[in-house]
Image 1: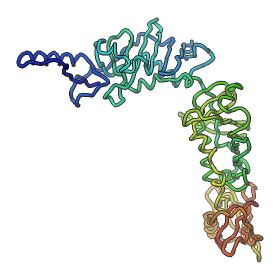
Image 2: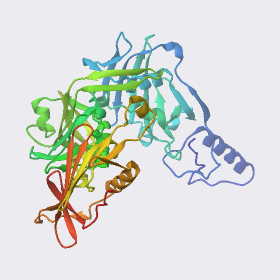
Image 3: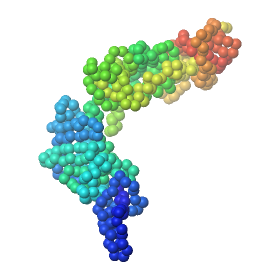
Length: 488
């Protein structure tokens, strides 16, 4: 409730006794009838409390059949109700408005509520509308209900002293100045562009197998590719950086990219992808883009009723051409035949990620569960470890341990597993200089996965204390000499 300042009229002398008492009584009555807004507030606890809030529109009025909404500084837009209960832009019937925005808006108009009566006297505000933000309202809505009744509300600035909780509002035909909740203002503050439905991309992260980013020159700036099938047991660790260099990718980095891909959402509709609009938003020709490739496959979801549903998908590529900034936190994006905004938070996860930061800094990439065999070759010997599944499906189902054969002779699986787990934790010591040179390999590892994939690591002499680590034929890092644990 807006506090009322008790003011003493200037330029008048107040006598003692009855004259003083009478004048004070008149001032009190005047204060109780007026709201002095946009001025210094009375101390806490002074001033009249407004009347309790309530509903302004009777439910019998029926649904909103049409409405015109104008926001401060913007052009008005008009919507009409269709036979199916939805709403379309009056000037374009094909523009079906998003019910997530229109439903709360019309429901608020059908059951319009106020929080407080700030004053019941029109004389207290009618010649000072600009002071309350009502001469140029923040939100102005005119609407017609099914019974033919027409109404209009004007909502102005925040009520002084309410800390933004209330806004001034006038309803045509009602002389009172009302205080309405900021929540109502936010519900009614709907931009025209937001009402246009936007085709959202179908992001199936489980089937994602390639991510490509191009720079402002249209050339590939970064690319990550899955080496194998999305259904492989080691798919999570089989990703590779394939541009601007080729190297094994870090599992956690890829997981982060995939999670961000799943969060890609188009925002405000900007228009059809016509030549003029493409030029306006710097989307014509080549430039920055994001391409997501999805393998053919199946995905499953569980309904609220607990029913598991499987859906098959064909191979698909989604292309996002990225254009000029739209405001401070979004950029224009072309997706299909439309242009919409997209959050910089979502886009920067791809546009600003340095591929080098996603390169795996650990030499051994194959998890123990995915390992079928490992061959270790040194200058003096070659040793092959083969992991065999337990015989019989019942044994395997009971959790029987795999066997480990070293050059054909069984050794302790526990000992091999412990040493191999230590190998998985090895991290490279540092980054090789761009002009680095190294000698021939003095130790080689060849990993074969249960899916038939191959992964090689070679340790080559870099200097007296370090080895260059060549992973699948490419070298980016070095490792301290003797950094790889020995196997039994």
